[in-house]
Image (cartoon, rainbow, N blue to C red; front, side):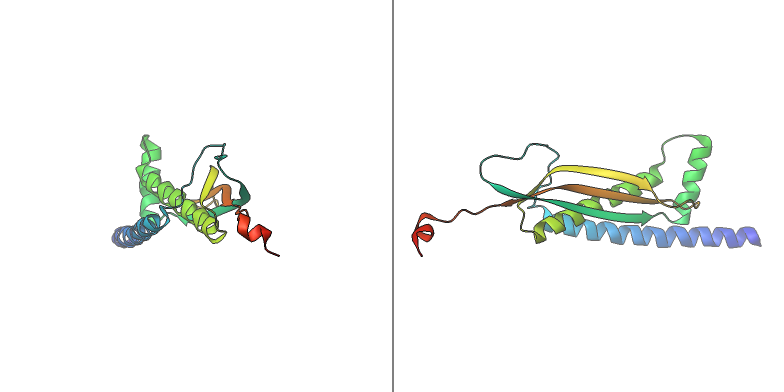
Amino acid sequence: MEIILFLVLLVLGYCFGLLAERRHYRSIIAREKVMNSLPAIASRYPPEDKPYDQQLVVGSVVIGSDYFKSFLAGLVNFFGGSVVSYEGLLDRARREATLRMKEQAQKAGAEMVFNVKYETTSVGNSKLASVEVLAYGTAMKPVFAPTPSAAGEG
């Protein structure tokens, strides 16, 4: 009887986890289409074609794994191999953190983010994996010089 309950809970965890993951991916894809106009560039050297105000922008997210993926990851760890179930978790976390960073840059009026970096860490000591991803970079907001006609007015 306990094995049946375990299997039922495992299947329910798989179904609800898959549903939540798909919903999150749909949200990410829709937001990425909107934020596509704001580039996030890993280069350390911003363009020097015009003056920019610079501001640190960050995006952080903590995403937890469902029990089914943790169970599968435990099996893979036992036998060895690539832990594919956690690769999707890290992909979603990285993309979500990048979107949050870009949203902060957009609110600041930036037209690009330079020197983008990522930090990743596991959260908690439980058997269920949670991962935090922090994306940070330098938001480049153009400085608009006064036009010659506006400068002479007084």
